Image (cartoon, rainbow over all chains, first blue to last red; front, side):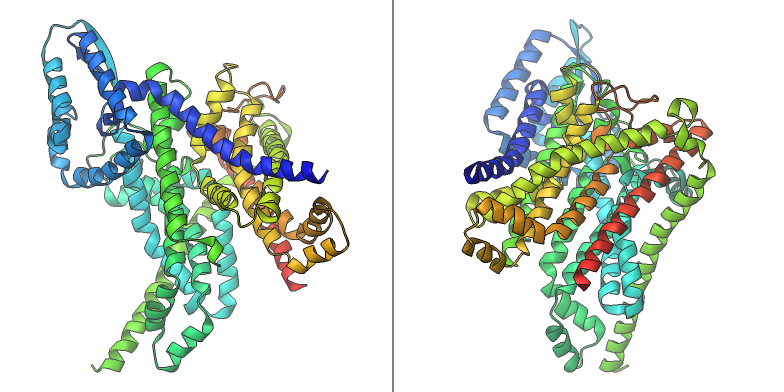
Length: 365
Length: 275
């Protein structure tokens, strides 16, 4: 009996590992056709569901296969680290280089300007597209638009949420009078529990139109999505940061006050350095949440496969692409969506895991 | 202006800015609550609870969401608790336990929609239509790491002496765990489970294409199953104003349910701490 119980509990613990591995494996298998077809350049391709005219179909497809297999053999991990690094400079370039994108027809040219490494394929495709004699048509799926949408909306959310959440956290732990701490704290914790779909609805019907009124543009846009996402993670981040701030020993604070520090100096020089890892951890966990959030964004981002030339333009993010297009997709488009899901899963996994490893070693406490 | 005046001024500014951000943040959140209540009560009536969606009510959806979450809980809780017990009582301090612990923490923040795509591939594609079991499995996968974490944390709070007392009496280890440790940690674990349940009840993304949603009373878990959250998503994007009102009502009911669970959970914790 004893042994059975021990074995059973060990099995349950291993189930977690198995579920995770199964998820990775299934996503990888499902995404395989798209990986073979587009290789890692998938993450740099802004086209989605675009018909590309191929001159000699056999050659083009075979060439693609070779490149893809070459990239694959390099290993899954390298592939994902690659897109993680790429995604961040990418959004910078799109932010600064928007006029270029606007002028270009979002096709090969845009890639050409941004990524020198892509020269061969991009120019090759341009030539192919340019030549009129056609023998077949290939549909091309690229993940750049959802990836950029995800990264940008998350960044906007963070830029909006971090100052507000820190303000709330500091207010709750240091500045507020005692009788206000409990009710406001409880309110924040409860708000963190509200299902995200409600934030999405509020964004669609109330917040979006207001933002559009102030900043112009449409009421579903990258900006609205980022802000709704920000509002959604504020309570979560504030509650976690407050807990981190509250771990500062009173003795430290009292010593600082005793030598005449003002409250600002105590927060700046005592509390923040002491609670730094906790606060950073709360930010990163919120970031992970914002990255994978579907429902709050699905209502307000617009769901259009188009790079946002302006911040108030509608675009799409990975979870929303999955939510909107998954059920009616098949074949290569389905595989491409799985590719996106795989990327999202691995990226959020890597972010959270690194955060855990370096910042939040639970065993220490 | 001398140095101390400047420091005081900075301090004042800081206090004002901090309080200001707190007020702005709370205003946003208050705004959400107010709109939710205002819009949600517009078409709230008795009919909502007595008719199915096809007749303009929410009965089947509420029931469907509840059933999906309950069965998912029934799957995830034993598994998760056993895993938590293993982490704390058997494998504690081993490398593998640390690894599993980190893994479950990471899985807690895994994008829920990706879990949906995974379950879609293994449970929906083979039978070629959305079904209740697929929804249940995705919810259970989401809930599992939360249960593991809760059990792990709560068992960790139990003093070593209790375990030693059990060992001294010559009780086998699994009876110590079941009769002494779990009993001592009961309140905390229950609270955690309640909060975990509250979390998955409001999930939409993993259900979108696993359970789907339907307008009728459910015919069984092998068929497409009604889900409140998915229906809210569908209704809210319809052009029909009545449907949008119904979506708000559903959202309000969902929020009230989730918040009630949270309040109950947190009160239990507070009562326990007072004792």
